[in-house]
Amino acid sequence: MITEIQLNGFVFWLCHIGYRGVQKADGSTIFYCEVINKRFPRNVIISYDKKLNKVARALFKEFESHLMA
Image 1 (cartoon, helix red, strand yellow):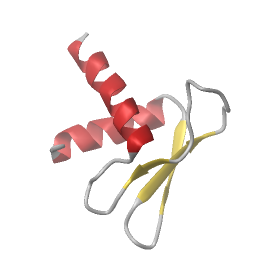
Image 2 (cartoon, rainbow, N blue to C red; image 1 turned 60 degrees about the vertical axis):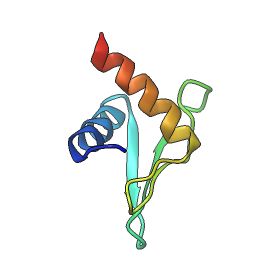
Image 3 (tube, one colour; image 1 turned 90 degrees about the horizontal axis):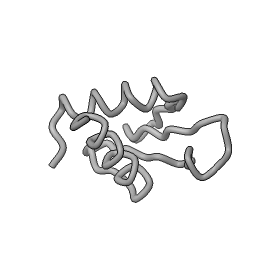
Image 4 (cartoon, rainbow, N blue to C red; image 1 turned 90 degrees about the vertical axis):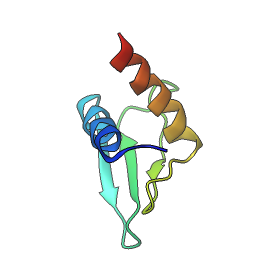
């Protein structure tokens, strides 16, 4: 389970590396990057109940590795 602090840090990190977020009416947030390549996948979704889709989970693991460094 992701804590609120981890989620806020993850969102800040996504914005810092170039992603832009769009908040939907259902409360979910979709992140996309203007750069199109494998390093910056699109459709990074954080749902209204703080669940991450597959792409977001992969980026969250990368975020955690940056925290450990």
